[in-house]
Length: 613
Image (cartoon, rainbow, N blue to C red; front, side):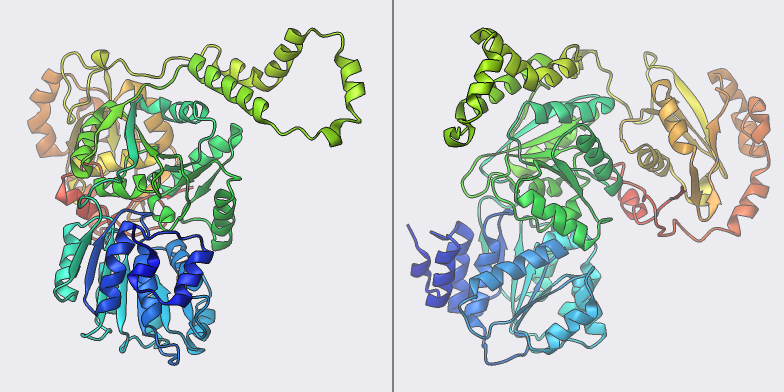
C-alpha cells in the first residue's frame, strides 16, 4: 500500500496529515500529488464528492508556495461559501506547521472590507467564490496577474450556477503560463470547453468511470402519489431509526416547508438554503456535524461544500432538474469505503427519469416498497430494545435510589413491568401507525399522464381561464411552469392547453382543481400586471369545433364565456405598452423547468413570475 511518505510530501505537511489522522492516500491523491509535485502540467481530475480532492491539489499547492513572498501565488475558485470555508480550513490544517503560510477565504455574505484588509496584509493562497472574486477585482483590491496556479474546484457546479461569464472575466486576468487544475465530479460539455480554452495539454485523471456514480452507494426508488410524498419520507425515516441524512429539495420554499413539518412532527431536523444568514447557516451546520440533527433538508446550491462523514442516507425528496446533479447528491454518502444509500421518492411519470439516471451513472436502481405501519412499529420496537440492552448503568449514581424504586414497583410482575416500560416509550408509534394506509401505488391500476391529451377513459377535467396569451410570449410550457411553482408540486394533471392571442384556457383534473385555485388566490403578477385565473364554462366538443372560427376572428371565448369577452385588439394594445420583452427578474418564485429536452424552456427559465403576499 502506498503511503503519503512515498509521494514525496514535505515532512512538515506529513506531520500535519498524521495529526489529522490521514493514514494512506486516497486514489485521486495517489495519482494527482506526484504529478503536481514533479512538474507544472495542467491537470483535469474527475472524481466524486468526498474522494479527497482538496488534499489532492491542496498539498502540492502548499508545498510549492514561497512563504517569503506575500503576493498571491495561487487562486482557488469554488461555487459556494460553505465549500470556500471548508477548503480554507483544510489548507490551513495541512499547512499548520509551515511558518509564514497565509490562506484567505473571500466569499459573499461576509464583510468585503474585512476581506480586503486580510488580503492587503499579505496572502499566498486565495480561496474564493467567483462573484466575490470579481467584486474584489473590480475594486482593484487584489492582483492575480502573477499567480502561478489556478484551481477550479467543482467546476461543473460553478457552471450550473451560472458563473460562466464571471469565470471568463477572472481567468482573463491571470497569466498565460500559470498552472491550471480542474477538479470536477462530472465532465459535461461546458467543462470540456473550459479545459480546451484555458488549459494546455492537461493530464487527465479519472477515478472510477467518467460521469458515473460512487461505487459504495446503493440506489433505491419509491413510487408514491404526490400527496403522499411527505408521509413516505416520514416512514423512510421511521424505519431507519439511526438515520443520518441529507434530504434534497428543489426550491428554498419547499426546503423550509419540509423541514418545518419534520420539526413539528418531532424529528431532529433543520433546513439549509440561501435565505438563511451566514450565522444561521453556520449554526445549522455545526449542529448537523455534531449529530444533534439527524436530518438536514437542503437545496443543491446550499449543500455544496458540506463535508460530513458517515451519512447513512441521501434522500431525493424531488429528483434534481439536471440528471448530473444526482451524481453530486448521491456522492455525499458511501465515503471512505463505507456503504451508503441513495433514495429517490418519485411518482409514476418520473420513472423514465430513473432510467436516464441509471444510464448516466452506470448503476441500477432497485424499486422498494414504502414500509407498512406494522413494519415501522416492529423496527422501532426492536431498536428500542437494543438500546435498552446496551445502555450504560451507573450503579454508583443510582444505588441510593434503588430501594425506593424497588418498593414502588414490587407489586408488578416481571412481564407487566416490561410491558409498561415498552409501552411508555412506544405508544406514540402504535397510535400513529395503528390504521396507517398503504402508500404504495398499484401501478397496474394507474393511468400514466399524457402530454396534455386525454383518452376517453380519463378522469373529468375542469376548464380554467388565465389572462395571459401569445402577446405575452406565453406557451404551454410556461403555463405548466406557473402551475408547478404556485402549487409547489409537479403532480398536477393537466389536459388541453389552448393559447389565444391575449388570454388562454387550460384544463385541470378535478382532483387537483381546489389545489390550483387556492394556490392562485394570492396575487400573481406578470410585468407588474396582475394575472387573473378563474374557472371557465366547459365547452362541448361539437360546440368547440363549430365556434372555433368565430373565436379566432372575434377573439372571444365562447357564448358561455360572455363575462370575459372583449376584443384581442384592445387587450393587445393595452399589453404592448407594458410588455418588457420577457419575465423580469423579480424577488419571488421563478419559472421551473417542466420538460427536460425543451431547449426553448431552458431559455425561459431565466424569466420569472412574481407573487405578491
